[in-house]
Image (cartoon, helix red, strand yellow):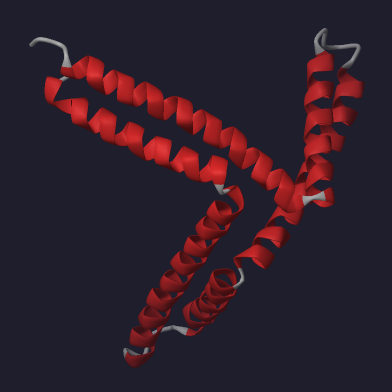
Amino acid sequence: MKKSNWIIFIMNGLIAILFACLLLFVPGETILGLVRIFGIIILVAGAVMFYSSYTSMKAKRSYLLTMAEAIFAILLGLVIAINPGGSLSLFLILVGIWAVAVGLLQIIVSVQMRKKVSNHLLFTLNGIITLVFGLLLFYNPMGTAKALLVVIGILALAAGVLLVYLGFKVKGVKE
């Protein structure tokens, strides 16, 4: 490791700390901002696809499927960018449906495995945790998402502090 990399560690650590602060102190606004950025990315990708399908049309090549995909992406990107809260709630509810289904299946499989596997209770516990997570998303999608962001924020803060510390340690190393 080069001694000159110390600044990279410190910069990455400071970015992680800034991200952690956003997640910890304004989780709702942070997640909505990230969703809005995602919508803009979809919108731009749709515009690029639209241009590509337009050039294919001019060149007398197949373009209808790409054009339809582009229009869908543009509309979806607009909806997400303009209304990130509504889009996020729908997404979180879909994740909740998935988590409930997976949790129930894990519990069923665990019950079936109880005589064949000695630690099937861990699988049952995982199923229960997944099921509860899904139910929490149904009950309060945004609150559950904010709680997860706080956990991620705490992890990002710890990583950021460690990176800054490592940067100063690397800076002090003699070559």
